[in-house]
Image 1 (cartoon, helix red, strand yellow):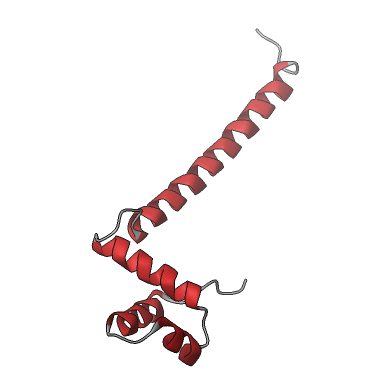
Image 2: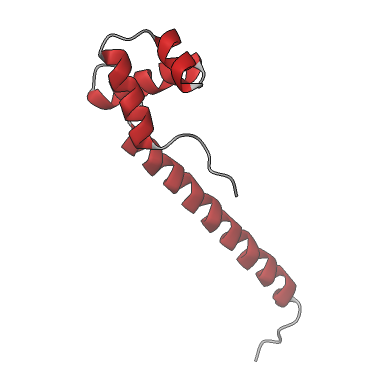
Length: 94
């Protein structure tokens, strides 16, 4: 499986460069990444710092984990329901 995205440390350093006064287009050209990525990282850094409204990185990770767990539980419930349907006609009451 391929690595997705850039490491958090790299993103933080890029945002630090922008906050230090360098232009987004200049940093994007130097590092060969898209300007839109830098704008997205800067916005997320501002959200994490509390300057803009939105989900922080920690909240976003928690939400992703919760959705994954819900999906797993829904799958388990579906399996149990299907098993109950299949076994309902097979078992004989005493």
